[in-house]
Length: 354
Ligand SMILES: *Cc1c(COP(=O)(O)O)cnc(C)c1O
Image 1 (cartoon, protein in one colour):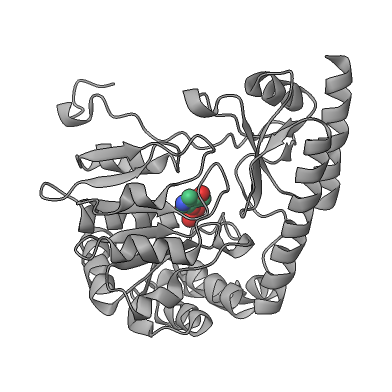
Image 2 (cartoon, helix red, strand yellow):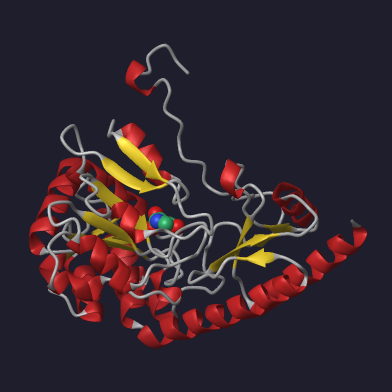
């Protein structure tokens, strides 16, 4: 730390992203990326013509990309804004809808960025414990008196609330905003986007990093009422109006429009998830019911950390969290069939060795 850092950040603990090793090649099942490349239409859209236009700023409103997202979800174009990754959408939502007059709440076990943003922006936050079975109890969020952030499906558990459960949370908080982070919704959850017709206190956040194979492009979106999107744009245009670059705008629109490719990738990942969960269970693991592109699993007869380390020695990366309630588990991203087969083969081998 330099002696110039503002004292307001001296105790700030930044978010720790999963390992992105550049030295050797691992089977990477640690950061919930998609194992499939982006749609061929995306590669097509990243044309020489687009690259040659990089001397010019991009459309700050990303109109073509917003139109593609709006068409996919059947909402108005003025109900969509896009950002540089959905982490940025989340940041804008914390800035816009929480503050001195309004605290925030989220589960104790959830996406690690929520408490980081609350700390960064000096927002009072309350962490609400998950149930003993790692489920979110919707009733814990009734009459919250705070802005509510929920990842649905939740991370790193993969467990989802139904749309009806979220609707009840919306009803019980008519004067507070409920932000639903749907980073993993395409892998089997029920999106709350249809509820936007009836609830003005709902903001939905989505990302291109998981189901659309564009983690490296950095694209996220907020979908909500025109008034909420206007507020979000106020943040964006006060911070970085050109947050979504030309190539990202073109790639995002192409990814959104190739619905057949998207469905195919998602279907394969869901199939591989069922296969992996079953295989782990037959080896004695506890596997939480997942609606995401990962499973949260507890090995039998070995700590979560030991399992993570042994897999790493064998060339497979998964994610381990040292947080008390979940330290017995590891989070395993669902890859291609070959990748998850390798995971199971190595798991069997290391269990025999133990
Ligand atoms: C991956 C993830 C995001 C953000 O991803 P970006 O790459 O910044 O779009 C947001 N929320 C949750 C719960 C995630 O797992």
